[in-house]
Length: 134
Image (cartoon, helix red, strand yellow):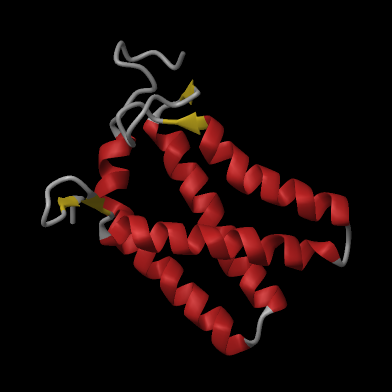
């Protein structure tokens, strides 16, 4: 599913894969520090900085609008998404009731399914148009 023009043609509506991916990212950003906070507040804060900061800093050119701060090959972008998914699932099982953790696991699975076309494209994408990583 691709991003589509809204009725007025001026605004874009996110596709299903983007909505599921962002929902899972939000869960990772909440559940991961919650799961770590009992051990270390510093590590909990660091986990949020890493989960939000790494995908903000690193990106594959052409994957999203705007140029990434640090261009990386497509497989690195895929790995960053997988990191978010794993963090969301593992952390939800640690801190939330089983029913909630099952829902998060199902959301992550649906995210993987909807992300597969993007991941196939990213797997073939170098960091820079010339094929170099930087």
